[in-house]
Image (cartoon, protein in one colour):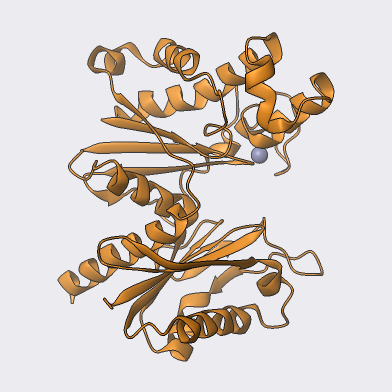
Length: 311
Ligand SMILES: [Zn+2]
């Protein structure tokens, strides 16, 4: 068997883990409840135990690195988790808050350990799956429960001063008054998110299952408005970045019968005319549970190459 990178996608509900080969094949995928980490006295130690047990159980002959995607911004060291607002311990505190989890894990596991924002990892997966590596500008916007984004420019992931860039869910929508969970008013997530879609279901379509909303009611005003609200954030990003490809993904965008032609028409209408004079390609992220695990491994491979170059 080939050497593998252990890829991990630590979500709010589930932790997915797999051994990823150099051809980006995921071996022995496994899933456990994130509560096993969040509820532990020592979360990093618990995570380490999960990884060690997994490696032992699957008898991987050589582990090159461990790479973890987290639903949080990650500092520029690619080791420190800024704050897991969606993963909390029994006292309700974020499990990792400005915590360098890689240093601790590396000490215990004896292999390189990398940490990255989960949306960045998913973008890297989508870029590889759709062969977009050669493009100058790729913008991915993922609308799930919340909203995440990632930008690959000249082959590099866009990074801000501290690693807290692209928090699109909390971009204010013009004169929006809805109260957001972050404490601000009128954030994108109040209008274009899975959370908002649940609200629409509760108030307008209580007898329809969430997954059937677009199939049964896609042509009606509340959902048409919702699709338009989603289109704003894509149009803003397309106008800023002039992308080769605009990747649309996340649980909402990947729903059955999400009206892609209407969505694309609305984005095109709202995007700046200079950008639209050149246009861009729409790419839809496919629903696949291994994206975060494989993306984490791709990130580790990139990071190791970068470190080797600068060494
Ligand atoms: Zn907000």
